[in-house]
Length: 192
Ligand code: 5GP
Image: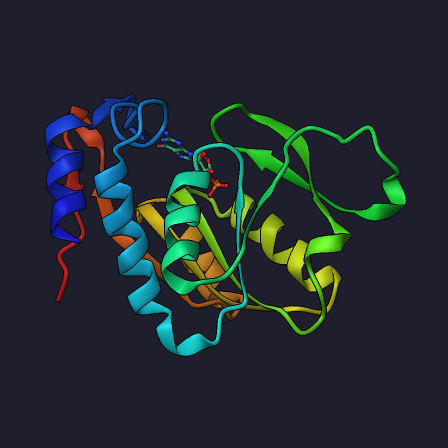
């Protein structure tokens, strides 16, 4: 997606060799016009999949996910990273190792919002090792619902998440794919 590539080139800040900071349009300040385009692009790519719910994880997944769900005309659910104080019986729980925080968190979704007949599109801001996406997929599968695909705003293709998810049988669609962040420079995977 050219618009997003241009934005990453113009405003992305490389931290070390494997972290990209995009806090001017996605991770802190958010660009609503860009997010609307992102949502439209995911909705087009998954238009034939009969999506009934969009699922993401708080907080940076929420903007691209809500725009996607708006375009698809279905509800959006975000998994919470902090334990709810309400009854444990009512929630689906999975452990997820956080790439950025380097700690394991429990993510939760209320059982009220996912049903066996649901066809779920998972959306997230970044893909690194795939831990967040696998955790969300396990939540969907706990209730016997289907994961129709995983939509990622920025995939770091030099990390193993995309191939791990594809090997597990999931469709992964990323709007930009980064080949390397070495020497402080962003280089993209050549699109065919
Ligand atoms: P994974 O679970 O695939 O290992 O990592 C993806 C999650 O970690 C995303 O939800 C995102 O919040 C965070 N993340 C991973 N890599 C980056 C990065 O380079 N920049 C930012 N801002 N977040 C990242």
